[in-house]
Image 1: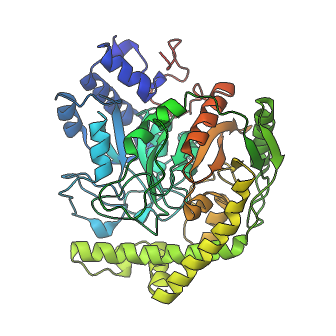
Image 2: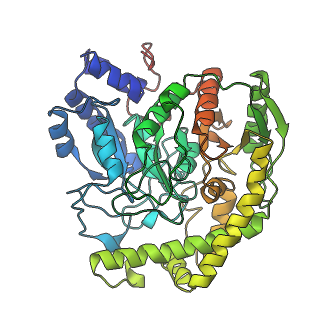
Length: 489
């Protein structure tokens, strides 16, 4: 196969790895192609903040593990997961000069799967926010319209995958940070069940298991196969998810059966949904009924304002902890001039949360989670949109002096995603709708604890019924229209 005559953007990671196994292309060629793709679009997108080109080329020339993604180019999010010898920022000037000496376990698992990392992606400072506009590196632009946000906090990952730089990229999620950019960029984004993977060796958990690791992908089968790579506890984990019955890549190939699905066109906090989001939900509900599922308008019953208020109290404590953790690790004294105003204001709020207040807030969140999850005694899935709006202009979701007001703007933009973090349930965003202006709207499905298999089976069925593989943004590495070969070869 001649790469000069082939658009590698037509292939998902599974197909790309199959080409390597068949000897039609080698890992060095794939890495060089991905680097060229990145350089073609990143002047517009600003998705990748640290390049690992030489390390990637060196690794591509070595004997790679015979994993499911042998030779496939990849990107790491520059947050939580560390790569030894590669500068690490978490979007913050406070980490300037920090170079990890130990790989995070998830990075080791990605390497064992045969993935080759070519760089690290942009995110908001300390991953706080639903847009990717850090002072340290500048904003990432959405490939569907560079004037718009790609979402956050895994916004650099979302922009790069949507623009066909790589077929998938690492992301993590404490309030929607995988699923928000998946919706804004037209991708598949799964937040796994609490305890499905590991944060070793640096952390046991982050915020009582609200935080999860996975990735953004273009295809459901890649999402499933990479979950097989990520899944599994390390030593001494504080939470361990129920083990799957079979590999997730096998689950994605099975029919979902007849599912009971409730859907809602209102938000828990009572904020209005954009008309395009309402249309997306209604259209998807109709499609699900056509596919034979039992579909009804229904939503969990709980005190949404109580959950949101106490959740943001916990997030404030999380930001204060993150600042204190890095101060201790780096031996530095943090100050307001080291951080963006919103991050520092949030940290100040968190420093005012006593231990008793923190535990009471966690107790109150858990009480609302118990009320909320009663819904899944009667339904297999809950359907909403991932976001309350299509992607909005850059600058819309940045700090303007009032931390509470910004948090409410964030909640209106992403009214659902944090609920699955609080409950620990798996949830997925699927690119099933495009607006009249050609912008993606993700549809969000939440399943029972431990039931990623249900999500993946349904996602594969919907991918077949309403395919998105040929949707390409205007800012795209490669031809605007895929070649006839198709990415499923």
